[in-house]
Length: 302
Image (cartoon, rainbow, N blue to C red; front, side):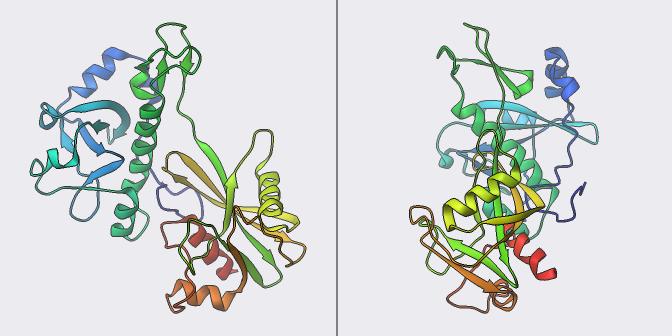
């Protein structure tokens, strides 16, 4: 279901997450043993996908001898249970078990699909959740290994009784605008010629708008006068929510934080449009799977 004007990649999850069912272990056991149950398999963060990039769903009996680490309930698809399971061992151990499937990185799946797709929303959910379980197996309060409860949406410490819940990290990503130009930057991790919207994690005790203004001042030295929220996107590396914004700024003079930004440039709409079309050999912008691409296209549409 599309609930925002811009359908970003990794959004549009069609599953009914059925929170009310997670509280009953007996119901969860019954669902997992159902003939209608299907599982998506992940190994080292990669997803078992079919030849066109969609999720390769497997039956419960096909997993009987697989080295499964963690299994979580994703939800219901037209009433049928859907789960995700992480696999232990080496990727080569699974060669030939599923001839029509291949382990792919979520970005590769998105690129192969070429456009926003409901399967990508499920991928974001499964990848983020299993990454959280992998990195949060021990109680943050007392250090004892915790137990998975509520079908994977909580971990509970058997020693001190503390409850731990999956987290999503909010990130603001913004296109700074001044008159008819937009600001793009290149971080140290990006290849030469590749520019994107500026971004940063939100900090405790600030609004989205305040985070946008702070990041633009810290990274580029520009003062924000207004902020508009454009769209948002789940980003499962490991579990972020990208909040896409535009920000009107007072001037074009830049003072860069060189630890965060190697270079920045103001671009016109003609330059941005040419880069999106792939017509600028020395100037590249993010591909459609990234919300920065959506921000640029939304700006071009006016």
